Length: 72
Image 1 (cartoon, rainbow, N blue to C red):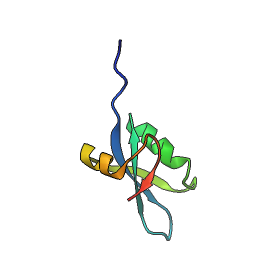
Image 2 (tube, rainbow, N blue to C red):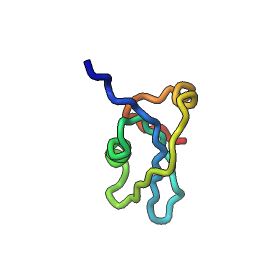
Image 3 (cartoon, one colour):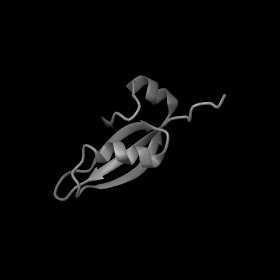
Image 4 (cartoon, helix red, strand yellow):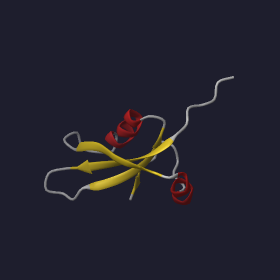
């Protein structure tokens, strides 16, 4: 029986013209999946970029849920 893929917490920056850069934490199995979760809520002209990750301890403390972006 194969194991389910492991999830990682990705930090995704969202930058738009004339606005401050926002960084979201997303729990996903792949970087592309994290970008898709953010793209659903961002404007089409926004630039999305993965800028880092979070430890397992922080994921538990922040109570991140899969594919639910959290503004950090």
